[in-house]
Length: 180
Figure (tube, rainbow, N blue to C red):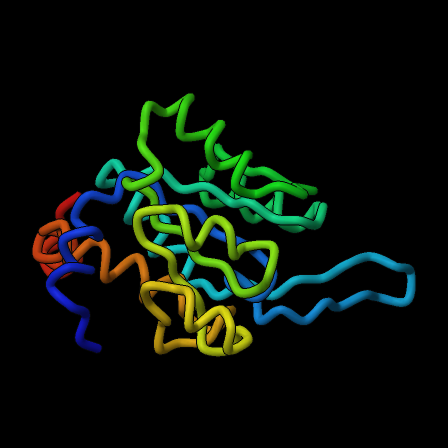
């Protein structure tokens, strides 16, 4: 994957990665058991990538239009403090979070896959979508990941952010030499 110099420059300034959930952290399909309980599948590599971002000081937020106990459980397991569910206006939610964190919208990378994400993708510093998103998302995003939502797209974003910000060598070194 080759990103433009201008996009890499914008990625260097990112202090917050905000993500939609269904279609980005999951494959977008909704699974329900016979008793009505919802089940979601999350990719473990995505989760590890989010932990790596937090280690280097990049904030992580989940902003989703649905309410799901599974999202709360996954966020808690990953130590994600900024979780917003049932959001009808994701841009307003993100603006409020940026104000609390003293971060400009230009310092946010956001990944979403459908119409409720479009206003955020257009106004944040780096708007990202996934290959399984509708075509109108691709034409308006700054970057489309190579991996599908729910299949490592978030890890691709995390690794690219770590590399763009100069953290990748230290991350590799930690795992190659067992340093923490």
